[in-house]
Length: 233
Length: 293
Ligand SMILES: Nc1ncnc2c1ncn2[C@@H]1O[C@H](COP(=O)(O)OP(=O)(O)OP(=O)(O)O)[C@@H](O)[C@H]1O
Ligand SMILES: [Mg+2]
Image (cartoon, rainbow over the protein chains, first blue to last red):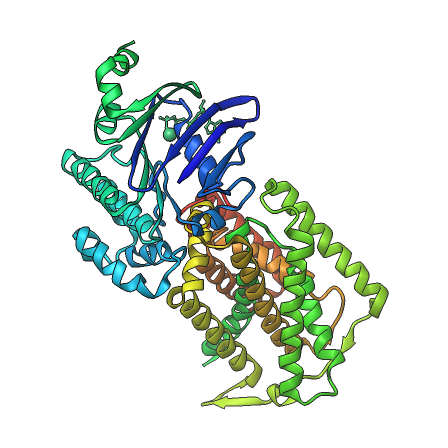
C-alpha cells in the first residue's frame, strides 16, 4: 500500500501542496482531481522522488521513500506516467519500451511482457522501429503507458493520461485502468476530466490550491453532491 | 593526386578533432558540463605512455588506457559529482578550476618543459598509394577513429546501457523515473570520455612525439569549437564538427595565399561565427534540451 502522510511540497516560496494525506491500496483506483495549479502533479512528483517534499512522509508497504532517488523508487515498483508523456523522442518505440523494463524485478519475463503489451497496443507494434517523436500525441500516450506498465509496477501514477486525446483513445485509457485494477495494481489517477475519473475511481481526493477539500468513495461522492458544487463554483 | 593528399590530411586531422570533440560531447550530453579538464585527461594519457615506455608496447598502451579511464572516473567522483545539477555557470567554473589545478599539479610533479616520447616508430613510415606517399600514421589515425566511432555507435544503439545513456541524454529525469541509475550512466559517460581521450592522446603523441603538461589545452579548445559548430549536446554533431574543423584547417593551410596563411586560425573562427549566425545552435540540434540530472 502507498501511504502519503501530511505531504508538503514547495518551490521556493510557492507552496504547491499543503498537508496532503492519501493512500492507494493494491487493486484500487484512486483519483486525484482539482483545477489547474492545485498541486496534483507536484504530489505525483514527490511520490516518484522527482521533487523533494518540504515535509511529510511517503511509504510503500511500510518502507519510507523519503530521500530516495527516483531510480530507487522506480525499482520498488512505483511507475510514473508524467504529464506531457515524456517519451524519448529520438529513441525508437522499441527502445522506449526497453527502458520500461529496466526497473522490472523479474527481467526474464520482460520479452514476454513486451509482446503482451504490443498486442494490447497494436499501433506500437506497427511503429516499433520509428522514433517516438514521430508518433501522434495519442500514440505517444499509449507508448508512455505501455512503457510504465513494463516495469510491472505495484503502483501506477498516471498524470492526466487523457489530456489531448481523441474520445476513442480516452476510452482505451480508462479501459486499461480498469484492467489494472483487476490485476491488482494500485492506480493513482490525476485528471482534469474530474467527473469521469471520479466515476471510475474507487475513491477520490479533491485538491484546491494545495489543500485537500474533499475525499471519499465513489458512493459517498455521488451522494452528497459536493463534488458537483466544487466544480460548479 | 594532390587533392587526395589533402583529403587524407583533412580526414586525419579531422579524426583527431572528432575524437577530442566526442569525448567532450559524451559528457556534455548527459550532464550539460563542458569539461575543459578533458585536456588534462589527454595529458595523463601522454605521460602514462611516457612513464610506461619500458613495458612491451601492447601492455604500455593497455595500461595507459586504464589509467586515463580511471582518472576520468575519479575526476567525476571527486570534482563533478558534488556540483551535479548545479547551474551551468557553476559547472563551467568547476571544470576550469579542475583543468587549471591538474595542470599546475602536473607542472609541480614533472616540470613544464615538453618531453619527447616515442610510440610505435613504425607509424612514421610512408605508404605509397599510386604516386602518392602518405604517412602510415595518417591512415592509422583515420582507421582507429573510424573503429571508435563504429564501436561507440554499436554500444549506444545495441546495448541496454547504451540505450539508457541515450535516454538520459535526452531527458535525464524521465530516465531516472524508469529506473536508469544516474550515477551509473554519468560514470559511464566519463569512462567513455576517458577512453576517447586516451585514443586521442595516443594518436596526438604519435604525431608530435612530445608530451607536456599543456598538451591538452589546444585539443580541448578544438573540441570546444567543434562541438559548438556541430551542435552542443549532439554526439553526431561533435564528430561532424571535428571533421569540418579539420577540413577547414587543412584547406586554409593549403589554399590560402602565403601572405595571409598565418591568419589561418582566425579564418577558421570566422567560418565558425558565420555558421553560428545562421544556425545559432550549431549544425545538429539535439532532440531535447529538457532538464538534466
Ligand atoms: N517546477 C516548478 N517551479 C515552480 N513552481 C512550480 C513548479 N511546478 C509547479 N509549480 C507551481 O506549483 C503549483 C502546483 O502545480 P502542479 O503542477 O502541481 O499543479 P497541477 O494540479 O498538476 O496543475 P495542472 O492541472 O495545471 O497540471 C502551481 O502554482 C505551479 O505554478
Ligand atoms: Mg499537473
